[in-house]
Length: 83
Image (cartoon, rainbow, N blue to C red; front, side, top):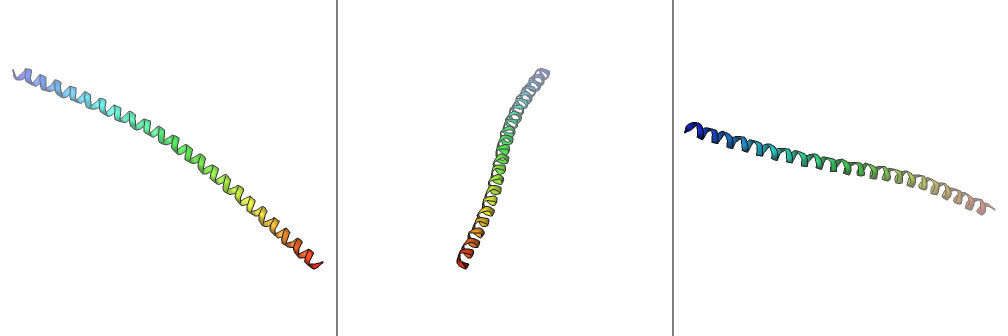
């Protein structure tokens, strides 16, 4: 009788162990899927950073060009005033 009861307890422990392992596998799979999503998000942020860097460079060049044009305009007005 004790052997039968011990065998039932052992079987219940085995089943519980298997259920827990299945749950852990599912959780691990979900974390892997989330990790892939975060990698995709990180890549999108890297692309956005590059776009902002490119825009900043273009604005800097534009500002330099505007400064040059303003200086030329000032020089022209100075020349006209001298005449």
